[in-house]
Amino acid sequence: MGREIATSEYTRSQRTRYRRELRRNLDIFETFLDTAEFVDEGTVGVELEMNLACTDDMSPALMVDDVLADLDDEQYVHEIGRFNLEVNLPVTHPTGSGLRELEDQLAALLERADDTAQEHGARVIPIGHLPTIGEELFSDSQWRSPGARYEALENSVMQARGEEIHLRIDGEGKGLDATFDSIGPESACTSLQLHLQVPPEQFAAGWNAAQAMAGPQIALAANSPYLMGKRLWHETRVPTFQQALDSRPPEYATQGVRPRVWFGERWITSMFDLFEENVRLFPALIPESRTMAEEPLLTEGASPRLHELMLHNGTVWRWNRPIYDPGTDLPHLRLENRLLPSGPTPIDMAANAAFFYGLIHSLVHERRPLWSRMSFEQADESFQQCARWGLEARVRWPRVGRVRVADLLMEQLIPQALEGLRDLGADAEVVERYGEVLQGRARTGRNGARWQIDTVTSLQLRGADRPEALAEMTRLYRAGVDSGAPVHEWPVPARQRTAGA
Image 1 (cartoon, rainbow, N blue to C red):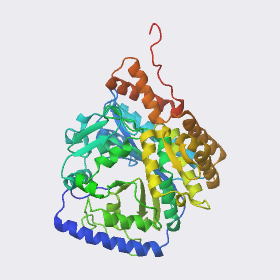
Image 2 (image 1 turned 180 degrees about the vertical axis):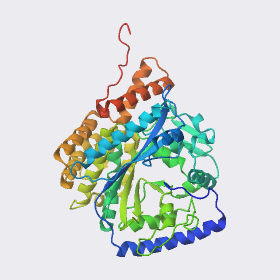
Image 3 (image 1 turned 180 degrees about the horizontal axis):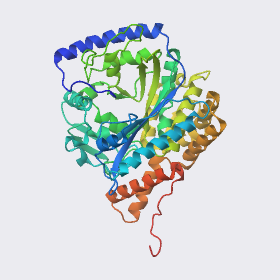
Image 4 (image 1 turned 135 degrees about the vertical axis):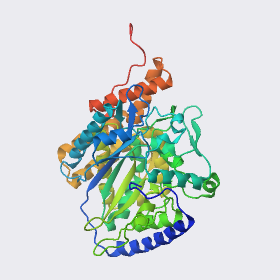
C-alpha cells in the first residue's frame, strides 16, 4: 500500500480479472521460490511513522502536505492521516556499529522533521497514539491524506463492512465505545517497522520466532495507553488497528471469518504458506491489475514483478508480514515486523531494534526451536496479554510456566537477545549500550506506556482535568524526546504541589 494507484473505484469485471491474475501470480511465485537465487546479506531496515501536533495545545496538526513540501526529501512520505509523517531509513547491517548508526540516523531524521514542523507551528511526536486525538477529528474526510490509494482503501473497507466502524476497547470505566463512518482511527496508529532480509530456507524459522516472541517484544516497547481521552491497553494500537480496518460485518466475525489485521493461526513451513493463505482467505480490497498500473508481469532476465500478489499482500496486515522484493538484479525476501509503536526516543527505538534482531537470530539457531515447545494459541494469548498489560502482564512460557513478563525479559530474553547480537558481530559497546536500556526498562517497569500513565495520573492529582493532563503530558513527552534520554530515565511530575507553588 506504499505505492500510488490509478483509481479509487473498481468494476465487477475488474475484480474478476484481478482474482484470476492473483492466482496466476501465486502459481508463478511458488515455482520461483523453489528455483530462483535470492540475495542473502542479512540487511536490516526501518520505517518510522510519526504524528504532527500543534505547538499551542498539542492537538493533531493537519499540515503534512506543507511539512513534506518544505522537507523536499524522498525519505519522508505521506501516511494515511494528514497529521501523520513517515520516514524510511537507509538499509544497514546489525553487525559492527550498524545499530548505533541506526540510532544516529533516527535522531537526525527526527530532528530535521521537527525543525521543519516548528516552522509551521507544530511539533513531531514519535508515539504509538497521539494522546490528544479526539473523536471529532474523524467527523469529516479532512483527516485523510490526499491520494487515490487511501481513498480506495477506505471505500473498499467500508463497502465490504456495510456499516460504521465500531471501536470497543476495554479500559478505565467502561472503556472506549464509539462508532465512525470512516477508517479514520487507523491513522491514530503510528509504528516503528523493522525489516530483516531472510533467505528462503530460513524464512519460516524467522517468522515463527517473531510470532513466538511477539508478546514479550510488545510488552517491552508498549507506548500507546491513551486514545480519545480514555486510558485503555498499554499498547492500544493493537485493538485499534484491528477494529479500524475490520472489513467484516459482525456476523462474519461471529462465523469465524479472519480479520485483515491478523496475528495468524498456525506455525508455517515456508514463506509460501503465508501468501497462499492471503489468497485463499482474503478477497481483494484494491483490485488494481498490473495493466492498470502499467507494470509488466515478467521482463526478460528479471525477477517477476507479481504486481497483484504484492498489492494484495499489502492489504493483509499481519503483525509479522512476508515481503517479496524483485530487486534490480537479484530478488530478496524480508520479514517485516509491524507490532512496535513509534518512539519514544532514538535510543529507545534502536534498543527495540537490537532486541528484535538479536533475539530472532538466537531463536532461529536454537537446537530445539521455541515454537516447537509452545502452541500457536499460546503465542497469540501472550501477544494479547502483553499488549493489554505491558510489562505488568503474566504469560505462560516453555520451561518456566506462568511468569511476570518483566522477569522473563530480565532473566532470560534480554540476555539471550544480547548474546544473539554478539553472535551477529555487533560491537561490544553497542551490545552494552542497548543492553543497559533494555534491562533498565524491564527492571523499573517503565516503558513509554507506564511513563504516560504515571504522568497523567500525577497531573490529574495536581488538579488538571483529563484533556489538560493529556496535553501537558504530550508537551513533557516531547521534552523527553528532546533530552535524548531513554524513557525509563524520564522524570514524572510530583503528585502534589510543593508548599508555596
